[in-house]
Each structure stands twice: as structure tokens, then as C-alpha cells.
Image (cartoon, rainbow, N blue to C red):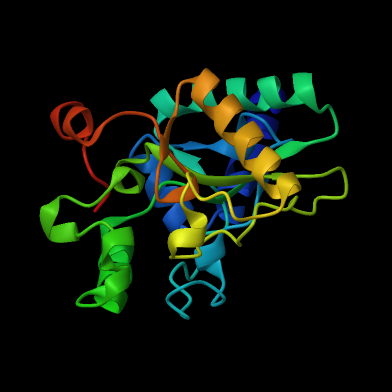
Length: 212
């Protein structure tokens, strides 16, 4: 009985540390990446205002959550990366994204040239809204992101995967990231070197539910 009470106390303490959004995603069955592999770094860009919207979109969320089906492929990508560069780690900048946050993003770019880079909620949103996409890069042993030619969240031609007018180092790093993610089962997005989907839009709509 004492042991049971001890574990219950630990569980309750852990739950209290999680934000309301994290608990909400837990309740929907989404999985906290850090609880599966703490070596995968997390730095949610929408938990800060230095993103393309210029706004803080995640008021309390600091953890990266994904649909359970996306967890094993992500862990595989981390293992594949370690096989090539033991000192490198994947770093997540966004993962599961509630649809109301997607709407805020869309409102910023709607009617501009940049709207091609943001999924329209009225059309079902994107794979982030199913917990089936990650915005991701690679960090070195010090936790600093390695050169990729642009920052994550750059909405422009320079971020396209077929854009080669970047340094040879950045080009090689992009290819490394795309290689391990694809081998692990993710699909790269041609317009954003950092964005990877687990399944197609059609499959997501048929088999999965969006996050309200």
C-alpha cells in the first residue's frame, strides 16, 4: 500500500507539472516525445514570438506531442542519425498543433504570397493538426542547430528542398536530415526543408482526427 501511494504521488506530481494544453493532448491520446526519447531536443518556435507570425501562439505548451503512430518512426530517425553522427541529435521546433492555432497562422498569411506555405483550416488544415508532422532540424553536441541555409520557419524560396544556392555545408546538412527522416518513414515537404509528414493528406483525413 505504501508503494502504491508513492507511485500515485509521483504520477500526480508529474501531472501537475504539465500545462493545460499538454494534459489536453494527453487526454486525446497523443504522446510526449520527451517521454519516449529524452535525447531528442525540443524548442517549440511558436512558444516564442520570433516566428513568422511575430506572435506567441502556444501560451503554455512547451512539449512536443505526436500521434502514437508517428513516435516509432521518429525514434528510428534519431537512431539513424546517431549511426552517422553519434554527437548529433534531432531537435523539434513544432509537432502536434491544435486547429485553433492553425487558424491564427492562416489569418496572418491569408491574402499574401506566403499563404502557400500555411495550410488553410477551412480545407482541413495540415498534418500538424493530426499530430502526424514534425518541424525538425539537427543539433550538435552543444545543442546548437547546425547550418541549414535558412532558419526554421523561413517562408521563401530559399527554404525549398531543391534550392541549392546555399553553402556546401548547409546543403549537405539538409540532405542528411532528409535522408534519415525519409529512411525512418517520413515524407519531406518540397517547400520547407524542416517539415516532414508521416502520411498523405488523403490518408490522414480517412484514418485520423484533427486536434480541435
